Image 1: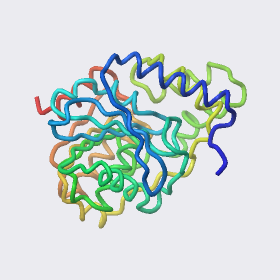
Image 2 (image 1 turned 90 degrees about the vertical axis):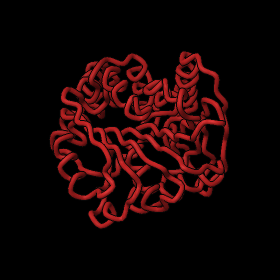
Image 3 (image 1 turned 30 degrees about the vertical axis):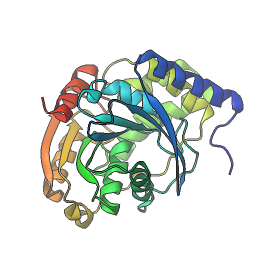
Length: 285
């Protein structure tokens, strides 16, 4: 299998940033690598094993340390399993799964079974939301409830707006390495400046082969089949997955929708203040 990394130098740079972020968190953790039917999956485990399990899944072009930083207090209530998603710039295997079928659900349920987890709470941001919904569609028997933040797979935004504001600046940065294009990309998607994201994505865009396949939308009949309680957090200024549009569709198609929150001032990537609101929902404070 050809590597998704364009050079060994680029891979080392990305892994160095990954390790730097994990160190900066200053947390006690265990790392495990689980052999699944779809490839080796790296997991960072935080918290007491006597507490109920929570699986947290990062967004596209992300990694487990970013997810742990986003919601730092979850280990007060849960044992947290932060997953490095396959074929993303992190320490899991580079097996790229299809978004069109239930591969992501099969992979995640295989992981849950290998970890011998029951009554799992799941939390995911962006692409992590798609993975969680695929997991529920494939087999929701081990899942207690889920929290989806600006998730993929429910609605998509205007493709022309995404093309001009996201993909063209990204491609121009990849071609020229001029930071003004990277800054334009970040300003469109991030609610506040994030220096680590800037450094990480600057390497990912240059040295990692990303998945540019279109993101599918969950079918109404699929959504109707889900029984697991869902808390949905949508962002009003999110041009990838517009919050108001998402809320309207979610209310129509998910019978198990337990709670919703529309973040009025949030772009796709939430700021620290909104992440605290989301974390409190998970901790039920």
